[in-house]
Image (cartoon, rainbow, N blue to C red; front, side, top):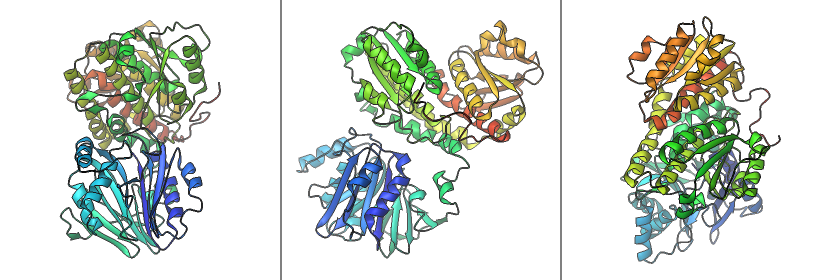
Length: 607
């Protein structure tokens, strides 16, 4: 997900664009850029890194310019670099545009444009759109953008400016957000309301395949055929602080609701013409084939993502996997060889224990691969290869969307290893990838009705302790459910493989003691039901997370939270969402600050 801003009016454009990009930086910050109209054409500045780098580069830039567009980027096509940063330009440099989304047919379009003599200066899918607009331009930017958009397959939010049409910006969208507003000093466009609210509290959310033409006097709207349409205004009554939360009461809930987008963004561009691609892996097929052991090192929530990956890698690739707490790994003498793949997982990419573990693994000759959310972070720099989770900025201390991004990224890595080892065919990979992509929509279904989750939370809010149990993949995700509850509600919780209950923990059960059981359909479903019965006969209050359509579970649980049916391998993705919401609901009921739990920080950069 990238950030788009645009302004045309009576005020200096550069300052407004930079301010807008700073508000949108949570949407991506591997690079940023602006294009402003000047007397002799367009002036374009692009920089890698955060918006602050761009702001410094733009000091004193075109103070008289009152029209321009800007962008802050998460890379999907092309590595983070100035050449791949937006705005992207036409051959002559007189048309510039910014883009949010994925152009799925960019390779075919690029080939056609190159055959017509267009020369490309980047590796992005976005650049083809600039050349398409140039190809169609005949003194009417709106008509040229419409012509280009009709050739695109995929998702896009576009803002386009042209040197030949001073003071004008044309925008359109398909499956990527575009918001517009007109104020006393001009017209604004952005990919989020937060960047246009300074202009007006009455905004227009552009519809799919609609177009808008902005100038200092106002904004005109058009349908897909170029016919004028009347816009539908939405009044925004939040203050800036609430606007940053997107209308949600807290950042945690906002970030939970962003998880479908995280799944889609993390998977974007990974399946290319039927082939799974992780170019950032930094390992050849031959090197992958030599891997005889995987060691995952992580802390906290990231460690739990590693537990999920262990099950997938061992099941699919048939390679033994150990999951190590980074703070322990660094103080012992772990067995690492040149054929060991060490996978370091860290949301921030700067966790001190994980960085120290990476150094230890390197000394022993292991190949290190990073999973992180922050481009250019120490983990990314110290690793031989890296997958970025595309969760964007996560503000709430308790990780939600970054955890899901890690699980999806590790699932991709598991599939790549299985392919390299000859344990998974191309057809199987394509099927699994499609099902993995479908989890985004399944999460949206879960988020659409949280009544059962809230009722279960009310039943458990006054407890002093709780157990989370499951088997197989359910066991792995139970650990994360327990951690979330502890982190934000301060209610003591522990997780156990369900079969371990009778080996000690069951002694703690008493009347009303909450037991949260992951009981989705799986090969061990019957065993989990037996463990639920054992707990219920001792007075436990049972909250079960189960698969839609399961009538049997209703007989054994006091509260049932249903999730859509998915392959067991992907159940950690869907089950984690209600467990996050369950923890949050209990924390709210107990009067806790869910965004800033006591004694915790977002990144642990010291021992």
